[in-house]
Image 1: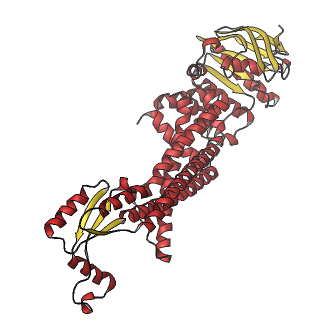
Image 2 (image 1 turned 60 degrees about the vertical axis):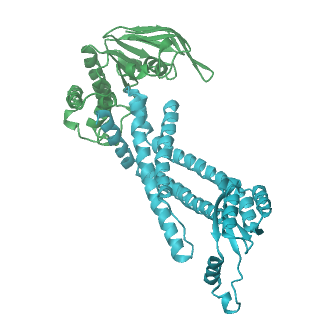
Image 3 (image 1 turned 30 degrees about the vertical axis):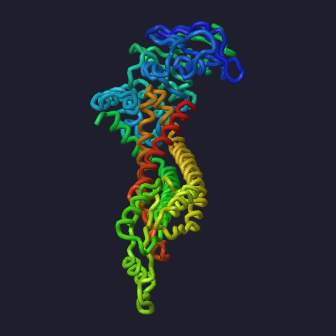
Length: 216
Length: 287
């Protein structure tokens, strides 16, 4: 489903990733552990094809980084869900609009949008706050909105870049539970974090990364 | 209307409302730039039509022998008409010359003289393509040699002036027009870039969720079109007001033709469309 084969990435004179080999199977859950600056986010960006490897190849579904065209990238991204530490939500819109935005942007029909938004908001437990503005929500709730948006297009994998970095321990647990439930429903999860203790109780494969290399 | 188009228009309008300050700034810049362009265009049009009018008035006066019989006058006229550079000849009889004198000077020569002293003449209008100084001098010489012609009068002073300075005026005009247009494009595309920059988070998220470049770009083109058209309309109104005020205060009558008043609107739409397309394209490759 996702395969990184001998991936090297260099930017601004720095070697960010070296000789990375990794595969993510359908429905699998992987935690990518490593200190800040180890190359975790870069690895996720390579899967998202925001950047392309300097050497090696990234294969996602039927897309290959070696022959990827600009017009193919949006098609690939519709199959991926991405969440971040800073949520990346539109502060001037309400919860419903933030989730619907992902569907509008990918040309989904209006009748389908409404149904799907209600569905994913129910999934993340935010149906009752669908018309709340983003600024009225707590950090945990904002991350739930981001997760709902990531799930809106029914991705086969959820890429999470330090999703609990801005959250307190209780909210972190809630978000991790939610991610586990999503994985339980068949969506693969690739989560990057620097907090090793966080993933002890998760039924995930642990991949450690340090100084741009996968160590175990 | 397709869903995507509805979305683009809605998002375009929303982004105008959300970034009010940037919108106001962009609109003001477009309006001021296009007003300068419009004023310049009206001035250009009026200067050019003044030069053309002066050129239209360039005439040769051919005075002919008073004793020439009618048949010979007709032959002479045909002969003059056949010369290269002659666009039109008008015969001015002695009576017509007298009537014109009376109108222009207010005096009647017959009150002091026994007979009409004014000679018969032809007024020659020169073809626009043959109005260079050399061509006119050649024509004067060739008509002077015709039998029955007493004198050819060419009032070349003003014509020389128009011909010499007209060329410089046109050149300066072209350079200024180019400068105004270039700065208009620069200003409009940069101010539109401000609007688009204020929406960078939306663009980033749209790219993240898999929106195509066309889809991302379209609302900003709508924004560009709306701002360009509004700025253009405001500029046209301002241009009209400026020349109305000039007319009220000074005894100068500027002609404001319809195409010149529509030009800022069309240019506004064109520049904004182009400017926003360039800005958003550049921005899409930036992030």
